[in-house]
Length: 356
Image (spheres, rainbow, N blue to C red):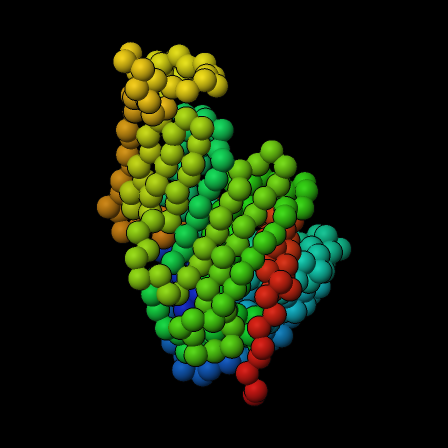
């Protein structure tokens, strides 16, 4: 099996605790040969953990031909600039989310990728989360009928005071948490060849920074279900991640349990429209109701590796692309639509910045 050699830029919560953690378990396919971090303590730790070289700046990688791709897990506001620089210096790049602040920045990344014939991938691993795969399986089975509304909630109750709540870092709940539910929402909307309608309300609730920590996003497109995305840090009763309304049934669930029910239209009572007042056999008013026979189904997982499963599956797509030429499952063009949506949300909700 071919082993891919890679470098990781950044040894923070993403670069070390997500990418690095996975790569140390996937040593048959990947080898970390270099790490870049501005902090000496992290560079020294990386040398011990990966057995690799460590550098203070990513430019020290330039000129190397023994690196198959670079993981860009730098600060969010640096993602686009560093990725473009890496692509122009001949590296394949896996960029952390959010890959950029604007759709134009994503297009510049795509242009650099094509000009240099290099891979541009964006780390949207939640597309492969087990619960999301199950939601898609249920939808694709058709048992729920035509979908009318899909609600996605990534909520909780928390206060935040780190750089991830500052606008200058391209942070806030939409750019930080949002790439996961918004990517899932746009994948279900399946309107990649068009431009969805965007309506958004954002607020600051429990954050100590100047970026938003409450987001309500409505996405619509012709002949598609309405999709309601909510990201809130002030929801004390966040009991589900998904809720779907369909013409034959519905679904609700979280990351460990999905429940759905539906009825068989062939077994349902036959009804015709009646415009005259409804009444019973004695002529008394009658409410318009019927009894449907529901089929209840459930999916559960107690596997604590649901997150690592998604990471491993994402890295498999990168491996197959670089080694066997398979197309990327999550394309930069799809991510560009996601960033476009986020950009529209911020344009609709300009929040004042704190003084430096």
